[in-house]
Image (cartoon, rainbow, N blue to C red; front, side):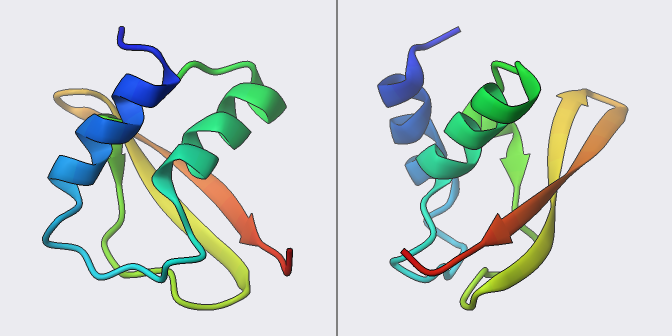
Length: 79
């Protein structure tokens, strides 16, 4: 798997079609999953169906396998 920076770059390519607030970054989602859950998630596997534009709790899908998707709870807070 690519390192955290590499995963961030891959995710940016896949997310070009997704409108997302500047305050929410894919690298933060991937890092939080690693820190909180002990998971090393490849950022290109994170799927945002709707843009995250506000503070609050959101559900983010992670493609683990071709036919397997997990859901992560993402909480966006003020910095």
